[in-house]
Amino acid sequence: MTTVLPAGASPAVEPEERRTRRPRASLVILFLSLAGLAFAVLQSLVAPALPVIAQDLQASTGDASWVLTAFLLSASVLTPILGRLGDMLGKRKVLIAVLVILAAGTAVAGLAGSLPMLIVGRALQGAAGAILPLSIGIVRDELPRERVGVTVGLLSAFSGIGAGIGIVAAGPIVDNLSWPWLFWLPLILIAVALLGVVVGIPESPVRAPGRLDLAGTALLSIALTSLLLAISKGADWGWASGATLALLIVAVVAAIVFVAVERRVESPLIDMSLLARRGVWTTNLSGLAIGFAMFGTFLLIPMLLELPAETGYGFGKTVTQAGLFLLPTTLMMLVFGPLSGILAKRLGAKVPLVVGGVLVTAAFAVPAVAHSALWHIVLSGVLTGAGMGLVFAAMSNAIIDAVPASHTGEATSVNSIVRTIGGSIGTSVVAAVIAGNSSPEGVPLDAAFTQGFWVCAGVALLSVIAALLLPSRRARA
Image 1 (tube, one colour):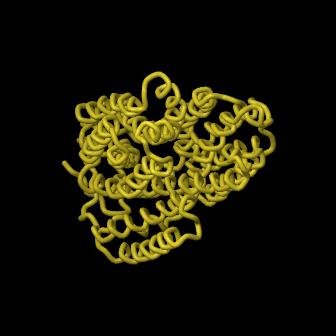
Image 2 (cartoon, one colour; image 1 turned 90 degrees about the vertical axis):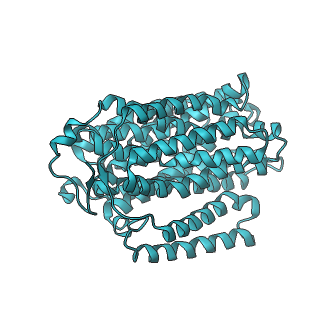
Image 3 (spheres, rainbow, N blue to C red; image 1 turned 60 degrees about the vertical axis):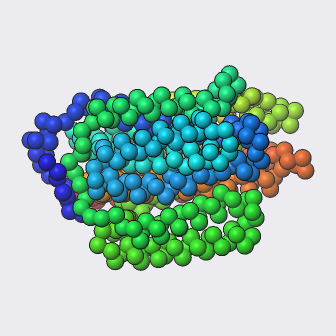
C-alpha cells in the first residue's frame, strides 16, 4: 500500500503493516553505504590521475579537465530531478535506475579509448549524485525512528570518506595497474550495491503526488550549468572575459525566473516554501561553506606535501605518500559521522553542526599559523575529518527535522547541490590564490598556502555562524 503525504505532514503513528514489512536494517544500511561509497570514490578518484589520463589520451590538460567538469555538471543538474522523481515514483525504483546508469557510465569510462568517450562516461556517472538523497529518504521511510539519526550520519559520512579514499587510492592504482582500473575497481562495488538494493530493499510506501515540473527542470538546468561552467572555467577563460560574464548573467537570470516559476506551479521541482524554512536555508548556507572548505583541503594539502623539500616549505612526498596523509581525515569521518547521528538524536542537529564547524575552522587555522612540520598537517587532517564527519551527518539530520517525509529527497538533493557549488567555488578560489602567489616558474610560494588556509578558515567560520542560526530542538517543539 502506498502512503501519500501532503506537504507538511508526517506520520505520527506508524501503521502496523509498515512495521511488519520492514527489511533487516543492517542489510539496508550495508547496501546503501556501498552505493554511496562507490559514487563518492568516483567523485575524487580521477583528479590525482588527470595528468596521466591526459598524456595517455593525447589531450591537453585544459581539455582533460572536462572529465571533472562533466561529472560536476551532470551531478548538479540531475540530483534534484532524480530526488524529486524518487519522492514521486518511489525511492527504491529510482535508486535502482541511478545505479544502473552509474554502472554503465563506469564501464564506458573504463573502456574509453578517447577523451570524448571518457567525458560521456563521466557525465553518466554524475547522475549518481542522487544516491545520497534517495538513500536518506529510504532510511527515513524504512528504518525505526530511533535508528534514523545514526544511520543518516553514517551514510552522510561516507560521502566524505569516499572522497578521501579516492584521493588516497588514485596513486597506487595508477602506479601499479593503469588508469582504467580507477573505474573497474569501483564497478565491483556498484554491482554488489545494485544487487543488494534489488534483492534486499523493498519499495518505500511514501509518495509525494504530482508531475515532474518540466519548465522548472529546464530553468534549473540552465542556471546550474551556466554557474558551474563559469566557476570551473573562469580561471582558464579569464574572470572578466565575455564568455565567463555571459554565463554568470545567464545563471542569475535563469535562477530568478526559476524561483518565479516554482512559486506558481502546482507541483514544483523544488518547493520554495521548504527552502525558506529557517532550518533549511541555514543548513544549506552551512553546506555551501563546508563544501568550499572540503575541496580546499583536497587541493592545498596534497600540493604542499608534494612540493620539493628544497623549497624550504614543501615535504617532497610522492603522490601515493601524500595521499596517505589524508587517511586520518578519512578515519575521523568514519568515527564522527555516526557519532553526529547520536548527538542529533539526543541534542538535536544544531549541536554537532556548530561543533563540527568549529573543528573545521580550527583545522585550517592550524596550518595557516604554521605548516612547517608534518605534525601540523596530520593535526589539520584529524580536525578536518572530525569536523566534516559531524557536519555532513548533522546537515542531513537537520534537513530531515525541517521537512515532511514526502519531500526528503527533494530537500536533501538541494543540500547536495549547494555543497557541490561550494566545492566548485572553493576549488576556483584556492586555485586563484595559488596562481597569484607563485614564482615565475609556476611553483607555489609559501604565502600561497598561508593565504589559502586562512581563506578556507574564514569560509568555514561562516558555517559556524549559519549553524548558530539553526532553530534548536526546543524552538522547533
